[in-house]
Image 1 (cartoon, one colour):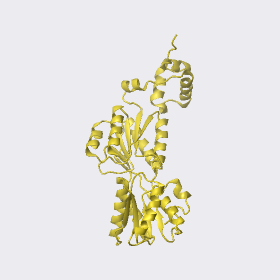
Image 2 (image 1 turned 90 degrees about the vertical axis):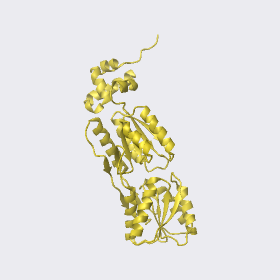
Image 3 (image 1 turned 180 degrees about the horizontal axis):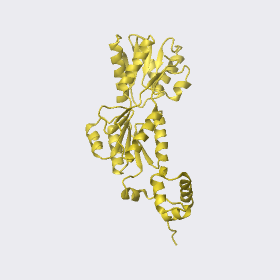
Image 4 (image 1 turned 180 degrees about the vertical axis):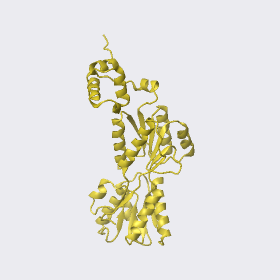
Length: 330
């Protein structure tokens, strides 16, 4: 004889509560008393009950499924933010669909279409969608869309991030105050990195400096790009006194290659990174970097989602800012 799958009523009976209370716990665990929630969790484990999410989504207005789309996770500055968001989303009773979009707009479009087809409650994007047609489709989808790590003037829905151009300008001001005069930029080919480089160059020239030299590298950033970038310095007409790298990984590779060549950092050449990864503080010399509070981005994303679920009004542009972390390399 086939064994009947456990039902919601079975969980309720074992936990000593009503089926409605179990349902409330499954949909919004925070509204159920802690002791009651503990009994329900224990009953779920003992009975082996599995919630029918598809039926729940059809019966109600929420699927409890969130799509988080990131370009990459290998050696990524987004990892802390993504991990913090997934932890918070799970604690709120959500499931997270994590997808890698790379630098290919077609992959991004495919993953967004997949998320919309699954009727997700929200789509969390890392970066800003540049395709006008795709932005308009997302606007008309009726799904919460949160763009992170950027701050467009006209968000699709809600943006939680910072101005990359302003971050570049701030690094230019910092290095000029430190007395550097001949910057060289190593720029990953991504809209975010290019905006920072353009902001840096604009501020540098505005303050009376020469147009910085520039080397573009592919994305995602990695250690080897820094080593190649250092070797390319010999091709420049004038040697820079500081190299501004688009990521801490590139800065690390450049420093290692310089030290292998007998060049002292920062005495003979200074180096900066971006992202303030753990390696920036672990290197010797430690790496001067631009810090963005990824944990705060995650908290703000959660605040937006909770406000939306409660039907509350929220601001559409949330600026989390940035700061230069001055260390030994510059």
